[in-house]
Length: 440
Image 1 (cartoon, rainbow, N blue to C red):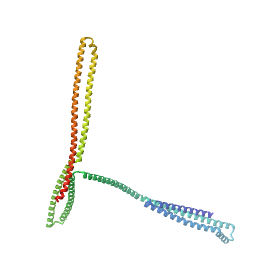
Image 2 (tube, helix red, strand yellow):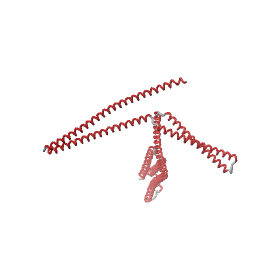
Image 3 (cartoon, rainbow, N blue to C red):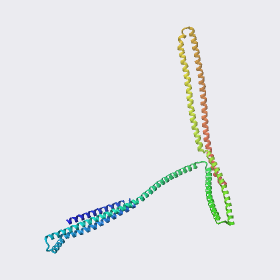
Image 4 (tube, helix red, strand yellow):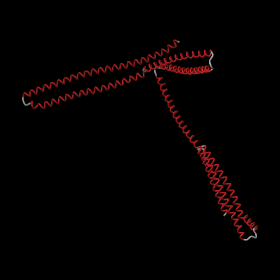
């Protein structure tokens, strides 16, 4: 019975030690895998857990060794050593009766059982104390974790703010890069326009004036800074002199001289500033004059736009004239047809009444003849109008042909003039090239 209990106790200790070893191996593998992703506090916590498990394994091994030694000793007592002890006990109690022997045997068995029970309780008590120590250590680590949590939150907030600041700076950098690229594009466009411009001399002069203006501004800023610095030094010196309780006549004269110099310099500065303002006004006036002068390209564009506008207006005017003429023609046709219908209706209505007597018949014929004469007169007037319009059309056609011929002669004259201008420019360049060495 005692051997079975001891075996059970050893098995329990071995199982607990095995669980501790397995937990330690799992903790090592997890620590090896997550060491890159853990914070400093988590690494410290894992290290403490590892140390606690190693301590628990060591205690379990020591307790197992102690239990094994006690159990071996008990087995020796139960096997060989127990018989020898029984013989010594029987020899010592020779002469006693059977009841005393039975009482001694029962006391021996009770002492053995008490020893086993005490061993088991001692083993259990050691295990509970180790678990309690582990729990206390775990609670202490958890308290440390809770104490460090505000610091972790603070660091996390600072990291978030830094991340937002980094994103804001990245966006600003991208916007600045975009702005710089746009400025480069505009500068390239302005450079191309400058190269294509016909007013190179004015542009160069304007550039020199702008550079002079910038230099004067820089000199003005440097002069202001120098004056402010000298004024501050003089005020400090004046304050020191006032604090010292008075100044020598030499120092007063020097200060007065410096003040007079400062007044002269400021007057000179005001005069230079006025000159700069006048120069800026002159530059602005020149720029306005340059902007008011259209270039050849602009003149060509204006001419094209005016030609296009004139063509559109002429086309629209022709269409309107056609519409008016069509309307007038249709209106006249409608009037003539309406008169014809009224005449036919009048004849058909009065024909029966006019044929009843000879007098009415003659009167009807006279009216009919007058109507026919009026129609012929109207026809003659329309033919006369048609002949006049035909003559006018023929004269306009002749005039148009003359204008077309004049336009062709104009274009030819312009082309010849352009060629002669080109020849003149070429000859002028050749003469300039030939005249240079002769003068030299």
